Image (cartoon, rainbow, N blue to C red):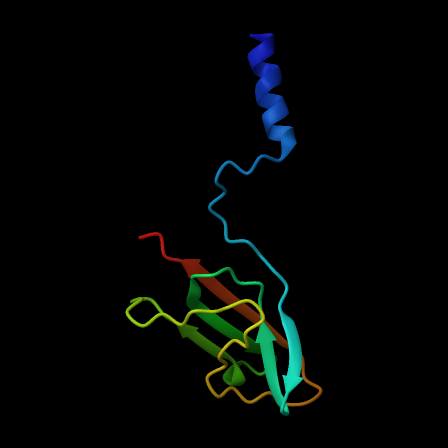
Length: 106
């Protein structure tokens, strides 16, 4: 009994993920290319956009796009600019970006 309890405690303390279903969080890289904002993420080959959110302090200027049907996936490559669908950024304003990527398993 003591051995099994010790084993369970060691597994819990080891930080073993055990197929953690939560999405991983990565920082985006932001740069200007030809006077356009370019945001890229460390995507893996075969990952595509599921949702894109650009948050502004002015809620009416925020963008939310969700791609739920998967019929026309937008694949992302490492260091590739994420499509921003015509979103217009304004200088000297803070923004938040979240993008959810998935990888097909079939």
